Image 1 (cartoon, rainbow, N blue to C red):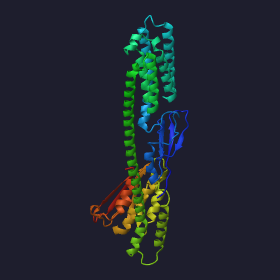
Image 2: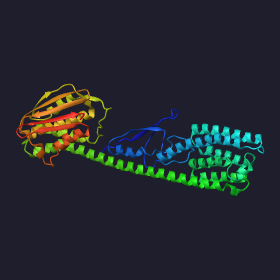
Image 3: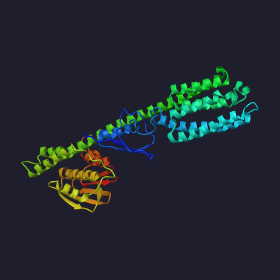
Image 4: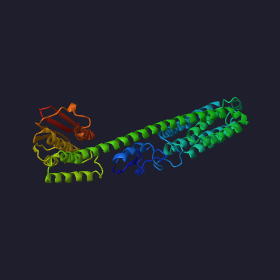
Length: 441
């Protein structure tokens, strides 16, 4: 079975990135979200291997180098959503809590003490939004955000009335919660919990007692648990998708192997087995130049099986059917073939398969029809063709053909189906036979 080439061309959606050619495989560890994947499949097994290769790609396919390791498309989607969620929390929270802080301020709160931290928070929120939009949600910017919020929490007694701090109704508590949420959704679990612990401790120290941070600690635990459940579900979904793709890959590989085997069986049936059958039936009672020529053609066909099988497709060059059909008609000994041809062109692989069907049909006429004449009629044009092979021989009942006879089923009907064409056999005992092959179906 011929080997093939299986590569993926990764075209980044960001024009600043360079395209990459990668070889997919089971060792791939990262999924590249910002890419268009164009698969080039070679023959048989390598062609099927590309199915699983589109799910995971080798490391280095683009994206920030310092982001947390992601295992699949669901994790990547969550990471992108986390960036927008973090922007909404930080920017929306800053606007809301700044307004609340101004409204809740009392005479005991210094305007300078309140104005400077709130201005710094607004500036930081604007920078945070710009940075996340530009470079996504990286650990560095998330930890910096936690540091800014922790610094505000440490001086909260200068920013909010003491009674609000005691009652856990200060605006600093929900602000600290936003930092905890961002830490959990953006970082690895252990790093997110470590950052959240720093925010909790800073809030407790700023409130006057570490025990005052109990509500923030509960929020941290709940947020970490919810994120873990969501990420676990996403990775389970990725695993199910990967298993489905692997199953599909194996099915396609098996289908490709069977298609290759069927094509080899057709070639053997049309060449060696046909020649041996004629020799065993006594068609050549003595050495014959026709037998020698036919055996030489069979040998060339078998040697061609070692090459790569042609794959029909829209990119194949168009070829004229006329010379190919003339050669097929001339190759059948002891059969006068009348040709009625019009200009018709098909993709080269399709034309080869269609002409092989015509050749097999003509050989069947010579072996079974009991007549020395046949007619081949072509109608068609650029990219399509209908070919009829007609004889007025003894005919047969197609429904009564035993399953062991593979000539029509595989060498004609199966061959045309394999290239997206169609074959129809019309025959009745005593009324001759008409074989019609067409492409496209």
